[in-house]
Length: 41
Image (tube, rainbow, N blue to C red; front, top):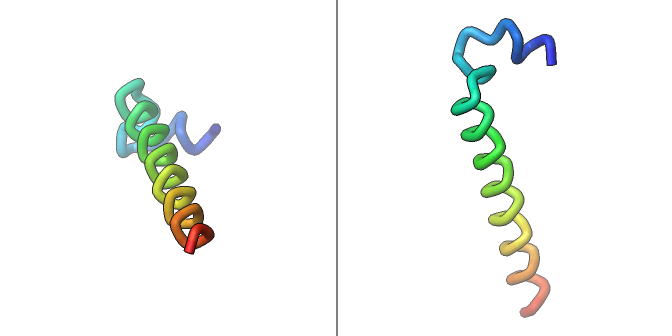
């Protein structure tokens, strides 16, 4: 977490944290949907 504390891009702010978490969740959901779609066929 040292990187986040002195991060110049503002990721340590609450909004940045929310955006990062939302991005990670979206990436996971898209990945799972792709795997699920490929497994069905």
